[in-house]
Amino acid sequence: MTAFLVILFAYLVGSIPTGVLLGRVAGVDVRTRGSGNIGATNVARTAGRTLGIFTLIGDALKGLAPVLICRALELGEAIVAAAAMAALCGHAFSVFLGFRGGKGVATGVGVLLGLAPASLPIPLAIFVATMAATRIVSLSSILAVLSAPFVVFLFRYPPAIAAAALAMAVLIISRHHENISRLLAGTERRFESRK
Image (cartoon, one colour):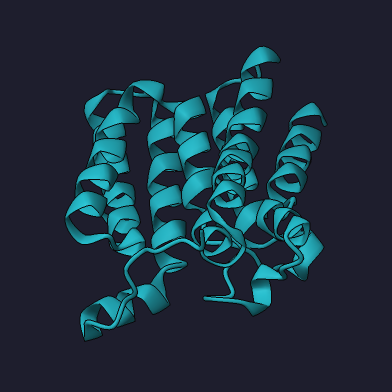
């Protein structure tokens, strides 16, 4: 019962639509502006860089907090991994937004920070390097996320954690299917935030 409640709590925490709530501060419904995505990139583009940064932090905390709670309760790696994925699924399929949501990159960063902190610098470095070279957030995110399961495996984390990293990568990349189509067509936007 404890495990079920923790996983449900993780899903509900992940479901909090940070970008939508912060967009309202600027009088913007991010779901109807820009790309329509509720993540930090679209918030930055449509509501300003500061709110984009706060969205990034808030979304990452949604992934990190449930993992830290599970570890504090000493529930075991399988439950920790399940709670992490529940938080990520909450962000992608928010109960507060009719089971719609974001792509999960920032929440995935929080998840990875909680599950496998030693593995996080390599995906982050890939993101930063790709972003510096291309200014394309989606490509940077996809390459970083693709690297995560391999890095977690190389660092020899427990099987449940490695499985969660793989599931996380599959979910996040699947949420980028429209971006992938635009990347292949050469029409994906480069990043510019509203001042």
